[in-house]
Image (cartoon, rainbow, N blue to C red; front, side, top):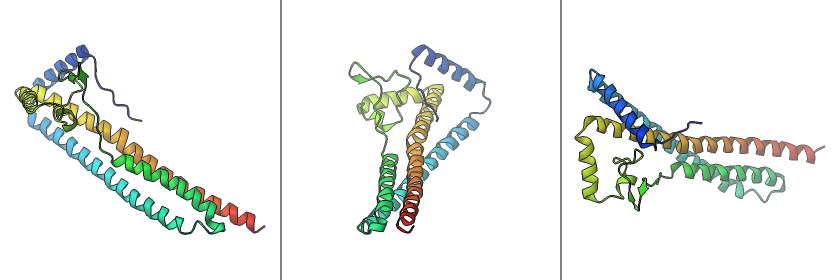
Length: 201
């Protein structure tokens, strides 16, 4: 599984920033960098929308399956397979709900206030800057925009954080949702065959 680790060591963060600055200064065309960053951001948005769409489809499918199966659960020959199917479908339903839940990660805090100096702090993420006053937000924004190297550093951090959320939360739970639903179908089919075999020796 993809592991996303935030850089919390200030010395390492400073070295990474200096390395990025040297790499940026050595680049001939910043238009290429802008195009690459824009392409990555657009791709992540598309992947996030795809995950939300698939999770919404699974929410609908799971709801229909549970509603339809509950109307037939009184039949003795269908009871065990339907109970098995409903259990796994309910697990899939919960996983799909978790997949579409928005991320509410708090920004790094220091002495009761937002630690804007932390490399984890993202001034472009609304769940972070909502803890700032408007004056503080504008100050953080313009202080980074004024220095192109810092601006690219923030954009890269935003791309990285968004990618971690998509990979570790959305697609992780979406995969679990599909696997649970598929397992439920197979288990219900096996239970039905077993029950029919046992009732007709």
